[in-house]
Each structure stands twice: as C-alpha cells, then as structure tokens.
Image 1 (cartoon, helix red, strand yellow):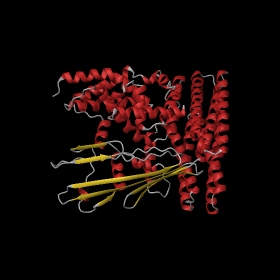
Image 2: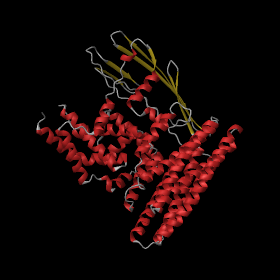
Image 3: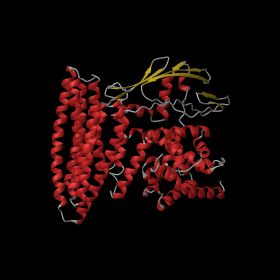
Image 4: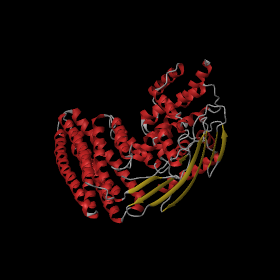
Length: 165
Length: 445
C-alpha cells in the first residue's frame, strides 16, 4: 500500500508541471485533444513507475523523459496521415471557424513546416530547449543521451533551420 | 536566428492548458492512482511494448536467418514500419493490400463527419489516379489493372458526388460548394498529368492513359458545372436577410480565406524546398499559379470588406483551387521513386531513390547477417553483423540503430552487446539497446 505521502507528492508534481508538459505536447502534435491525452498518459505512466517503488531524483526531467518517449512513439504511428491532410484540418475543419482559429492554423502550419526539416530527436531537442527552456544537462537526462550529444544535435538542428529561414 | 514562432505559439489560446482540462485530467489521474483502472491508451501502449520476439518456434528449423528478415519481423511487431512502407506501393506490389486494406481503412475510421469523409474520398480518388500515373510511367499498366483502378476511382468519386448532393439537400450550399471545389481541382490536376503522360509513354500504354483521361475529364466537367451552380446558390443565399445565414456565410468566407493562405504558404515553401529538383518550366508554371491565387485572396478580402460575403467565399475557394493546381504540378513534376528491396541470403537491403529528372539519386546498401543457433534446450545465441555503403547526389543522413529487445526467464545469463560508430554499450541482464531499423525517405505523391 503506498503511503498517502507519495501520492500527494506526485499530485503536487502534477499541479506544478502539467501546464508545461501540455504546452510541449500541443507544440508537437498541433491538436488540443491529442495533447491532453498525451499529457494524461505521461502522468499515468510516470505514476506507474513511481508506484513500483522506484526512486526518481529529478521529477521534472523524468516526466519529460516519459513525455518525449510517448511523443516519438506517437509520431511513428501517425506517419500514415499525409501532411497535407493535417494542414487542411487545422485552421479549416475546426468546429467554429472564427478568426482566431484560422490564425492559429497559420501559426501551427508554420511550426509544422519548420519541424519538417528536422528528425524526431532534433524536434524534441529544439522544443525542450526553446519552448520548455530546459538546460542541456536536463535535456540529456530526458532523452537519455550524453550532454555532448545534446549540443551536437542542437547545433545540427539549428543549422538545418537556418538553412531554410 | 529568428525563432519568433515560439513566441507566436505561446500566445495561441489552445497553447494553455485550460482550467477545466487540467482538473479533468487530474481527476482521471487520481482515479488511476486509486485503483487498478488502466486507461485504455496505456493498456494498448504497454502490451505493444512488451512484445517478445520468441525464438521457441525456430528450434532446429533455421540456423541462419538473413538479417533483413529479422528486421522486418521486428518492425512488424514493434512499430508501424510495414504500414509506412506500404504507403508508396502500387497495385501489384506485395504491400499494396496493406495500403488499401489497412492504411486507408484507418484514415477512414479517423475521418469524423460527412465533410471530412468527403475530403478523404476526394483524396483517395486522387490516390488511385496517382497510382495509375505511376504505373503508366513505369509501363506496368495493362487492361486488368486499369479497369480495377478505374472502378475504384469511380467508387470514390461517386461517394464524393453523393455527399455533395446530401449537403445540397440540407441547404448547406457552402459545404457543398467547398467539397465540389476541391474535387474539381483534384480532377483537373490529374487530367493535366495524364495529358502529359500521354505524350511520353509507349503505344501500348497510351491507350490506357487515354481511356483514364477520358473518365477523369468527364467527371471533371460535371464537377465544374456542379461547382458553378453551387456558387450561384451561395450568392443567392448571401442575399438572404436571415442573420444566422449571413453569419454562417461570413464565417465560411473567413475560414476559406485563411485556408487559402495556408495552402498558398505551404505551396510556396514546397517550391522553395524543391527548387533544385524541378525544371524551369515547372517552376514558372507553379509560380504563376501561386500569384494568381494570391491575387484572388486579395480580391476575396476586398469583397469581405465590402460586405459581399458570398462572393468572398467563392473567390476564396477559387484561390484554393488554383493553389492546389500549383501543388499538383509540383508533385507531378518530380516523382520520387523509392525502392526498398530485401535480397536473398546473405541479407542485403538495397534502397534506391531516383527522381524522373535525374537530379536526385541516392543508393544505400546495407548488408547484414544474423546467425541464430538454437540448441535442444531452447537456448539461443544470436550474432549479427552489418555493413552499410552509400552513394548519393544529395545530402544524406543515415541514422543506423538496431533493435534488440527481449526477455529471458532463465537464470542463465542474457547478454546483448551493441556497437556502432558513436558509442559502445555493453550491458548484461536483458539489455535494452534502444533502436529500430528504420528507413526514412521523402516521397512526393
């Protein structure tokens, strides 16, 4: 039986990090409902890990690790959907097509377009660095690669983006 | 470097987790933590992850398994690899049944609402035409194949037409016009492509291309007529005094304008990216259409200002049609042919990417072998080795990783060693060297 301490501690972590994780998801999947699903799954899987008695030293980095794994898995499964189909969906096929929604569509299209230049790791690294504001050492922990590797990949990603700006 | 799209993103309304959603998720989380209630998503993910690659069935039968087959098996069980490879297959290819039977069914299941389904049917009709075009270019076309493609195309086209009629009956002229417009654009684009093909294929194939072109042309004409009629219906509706009707048309007009801008933007960036691989004529053609589309958008916006909302809607749709024509032109001008082949033992995977104008050429060859020895107790030893060689006219990035996953319940040691150019990892006890044999190629359709 797990102590209520552990549970309430974990729920505190939820209150603290849920917003940031959701934002990261939305940046990557462009859809509110999918982003919410992924955020929920992240915390549930993280809880499973914690409830098995395993220790987590850096909860924030750990949550990001679970999250990035889920996103990378998610993007593999979605390869079948053509990009054009998605571009048209956002900004055009939303329930109420007011000005705001269409504007969102344009921003998300731009993001999607830039992200296209990068591979799946680079997309995560760029997002973690510039959206979440994680330090390279935390990114390294989240992605389970060396900090050096993080800098290498980050620079490569920036070079790629710069090429097409 | 200008990364201000992050700032723009942060200001989007949906970028913030709403209070309602946050507490709803928290509730679900609390329930989850309370009991053994597994969220369906989680259940699915967990069971996929723990799939074991069981060697029991192979005892005694195969001593040496070519690596590509293992790679294929692993890909099959752990990711959507086969599904993705099927996307570019053509009638007659081994994976084509997956493209049509699985991938397209999944997309169908995900299309919610009549409009989305109509859009999907339009795209599927177009896919059939693309396949026909590619087959013709490869001289793989014959009467049987053509007839089957035609039949499929006809089925999708008829569904689209039925949906247009449905919307018409409901007096939803804007939706009907919208679908008709996209359908028309798609058909006209393919008409042009088939026309070009006619000039370049063999005599034997010409006949088939011609027949197909005839069907497409006929349907295109009908679609154009329909669309024109619907546009005037929309205008009539626009004169309606009813506040709700007026508001709806305005919303649709604005949405249309923004959708047009999106499509134009994506075509422009496509042009930019593919500049090097397109010929001068194609670029000029596409650019001309893009500017036409842009001026149509300006006109649409003007009409909107002038309270002529119905006209604005029609102009926006026209802009979308023209922009889509540009896109189809770009795509047709550069067909990238990607071939992935698994050759017999010893395992060789060959990847060839060619474009029809010779500007893109990439060849990757990876050769590997896996030796599996299984003894009568069922204990197994697997040794793999691989070797990759490549040659390319364009930038190439090879990410080679390999997937070794499994579980051993016996007390005897399980050892896995993975070596690659960058790192050497040695672990014991059911090692997990994360990886996947993944083939990524950009293909335009």
